[in-house]
Image (cartoon, rainbow, N blue to C red; front, top):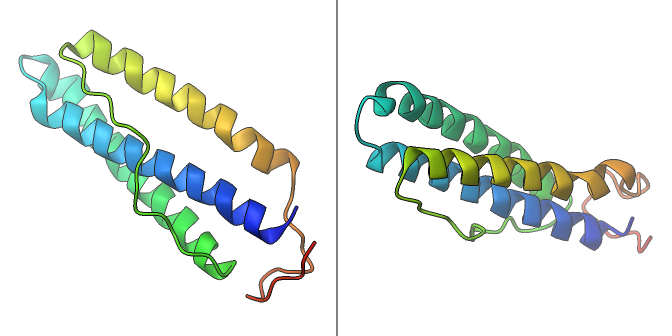
Length: 120
């Protein structure tokens, strides 16, 4: 896999992690009722985990000589707890699909970890 292709893929994944972080936090902030104490707190904890995923990806992008994106994928803001759960589940499923090509196409290890492009 060409290094720039890898960086672009990692940046797409990073945008998804930003989306997840912001979306989970937004859902936590606006949630009302008794669900806030259970589902809301869960969303908050998940958001923190998503931030750690974003940090990991950004560090890999920089190590490859790229610049991490600062733009999240679109954030969905539903009105009900059920709808929040559904959109977050859909986003997690999409993240799994998005990560699959990276899993099956390892980077060019001739380039790693140097910051120079090898052109492969």
